[in-house]
Length: 313
Image (tube, rainbow, N blue to C red; front, side, top):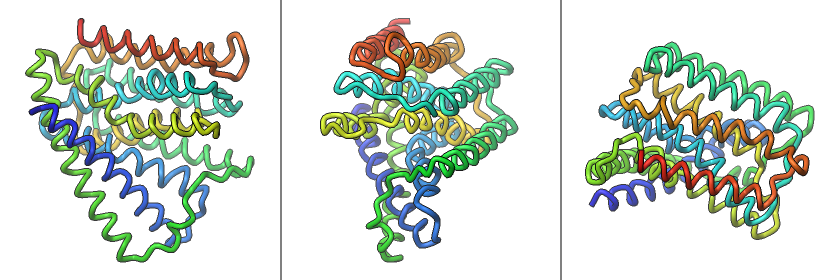
């Protein structure tokens, strides 16, 4: 039964996230916000909503390990699973802005998160405030850089003519689906952890993380098959930054998150740091600014090892 709740929870999170993105973009058009700002801020925040609701619900219901490893596991899955499988389908060209801005920012957020958690085994409200403020600063720098390069994010123009009534309905559906999806997913994860004899942290870093990465994975693979720009590595790295800055930042602002599972600091966070760090040698060796199929295979195999060690440790 726990698997049923997890699957239903994930389905509702996908549906809720989609409706929230659509309504947020439509509302932003009504407020005359530019497409670039909508694409780089509004959409990013809206797509982080499922993870945010899961972490917030977990923290408030006494499962802080799920709150933390939901983010750590998602960040590992974004690189090992999403990027790896997409590269297997079609090699990925890497933009120079990746190692000039996005990658250093992701490493900084990851290292700061490790320091905060390792320092006193918790993520306090002040530390959450620091992470969220750093995210806002990163977005300001990102927007300034994008304006210089005249980058326009892909945003559906049809959403500009949506009625206020439809926006309200979408918001209501999105919020309701996200709420119940997060409750069912967290409850199902707790039951599954008990049934398998593993910790909440293991389920959060594997089952929940893979589940919340499925929509992104599907979109990336479809784009790769169509020979379109398979995946903006910058956007994927941006997702990892948002996970730390907005999901954990905002959740810890509401309630201090305690580290209740030792494996978070002795194993999982090191995997997250390793997957982030390995991207630099991957994009430069042997062929510069390219993630080939062989490199994608290396990432997927490494992710498989992470899953294996998570369940057997």
